[in-house]
Length: 113
Image 1 (tube, rainbow, N blue to C red):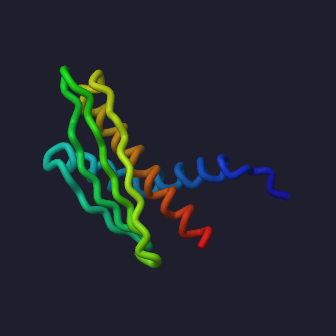
Image 2 (image 1 turned 90 degrees about the vertical axis):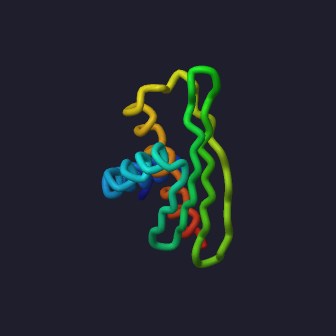
């Protein structure tokens, strides 16, 4: 019998994404910081991300559009980034986790189809 609830299953999925794609997502995070946008493609999912990095006088914002390539359904959202995160390694970690979250969420949605 499986006692894992949906939240715990998603946590495992997120952990798996970070373990298997973490380095690649970290590189995408660095590209976002350098160029302001990135396109990430994977099985069944395309992510388009744009970044406005936080500065001392304003918070930043990470915008992500996720497209399910089978259904062509697109979900969009944005995540505020605290202006106190001016340490680049901390910002890269935060962005990497957010990208992994979107991939795990996209995989979770694909599993429900």
